[in-house]
Image (tube, rainbow, N blue to C red; front, top):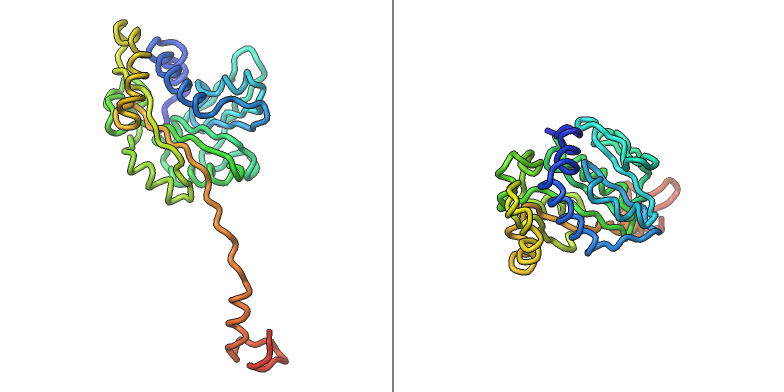
Length: 248
């Protein structure tokens, strides 16, 4: 079940805990993917808290928000780049996205396999996608005070297996949100320290979210020469006017 866009906006933009979570995940993402003005960047679910660096770099940005969640205009005060869409039918051409960020879009979907199929379809050859989901081993997935306490949390093995089934190759698995999901001032003030320590000591085990960076696997087209040769050796499949010993 998708969360309501108003609840998501309220958490990330109107609470201190939400701003801490936004900064922790976004800093990790930007460290892996420095913004580039030549890229086409898309977000699905509620990924807008992570996309502003690409707007500032003047990249092409589109924020896809599923109909079950609802949509809001974003960014405020600028030309809107957010669009409402069906979660299994994105209004994008195939192979047009260089960087794809999925947050609050996979674990809450009623049809995650179709979401992954759409992600694979729109990702360009050589492009990269980042799937951000609640970590089953982390404490954020156990608290319904944040959006990461809703939907299906994943273990690292579960996430990798599901991505592999949809022809994604996992290039990097990391984590973020090592501080407790508490609005108390002490934990908020020390959040940056928790992030630095957690990234060094527990790169993907202890964080509140898992971050899987993937590329799409494209199977090589099958060669038809061997198939034609086999057909030529079977008399019943020889073209009209040709014998079994004649080449097809």
